[in-house]
Image (cartoon, rainbow, N blue to C red; front, side):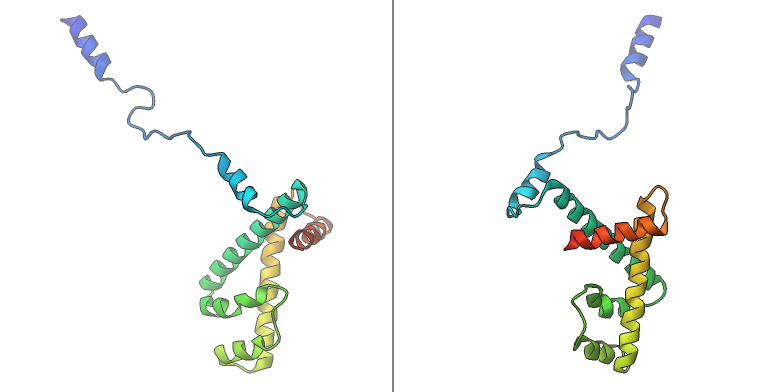
Amino acid sequence: MRFIGHERQKNHAQKRGGGQHVLSLDIDFDDGERKYRLDPPDGRTPVEVFSRSWALGVIETAQVKLLRTEEAAGRGTQFAKLAGFLSSGSGGDGYVEVASALCAKEPAARKAVSRFRERYRVVIRGLIADTLENPSEKLIVVEMAELRMALG
């Protein structure tokens, strides 16, 4: 009787990791290759491709972080109106439209854009500093230059 009880206990015992959801290790590693296969060949080296990918990741992370900061400060709508000015080629007639959207005069809109870009720069510098082991002003400036070069 004792043997039967032990066998029943053994058969109903939870095994290692019992009750846990099974995580499949069937990962499609070809996905990354597929992504790069679709890119037109442009003669870039793997280092240049990596650098551009890194730079785009920093920019995307900075925009998300800035959006969260602006929303927390109650400036989410302002972010939506000024986000187009984060790229280097914006400006010109856009200031008139932004001034109208912000119910402000054009010089005030220009100043708002300038402050917005400065906050963006600070976020990017912070992200870059976080990636450095010993962030110094000199290293941050070098990495910022690398970021600009990678973005072309």
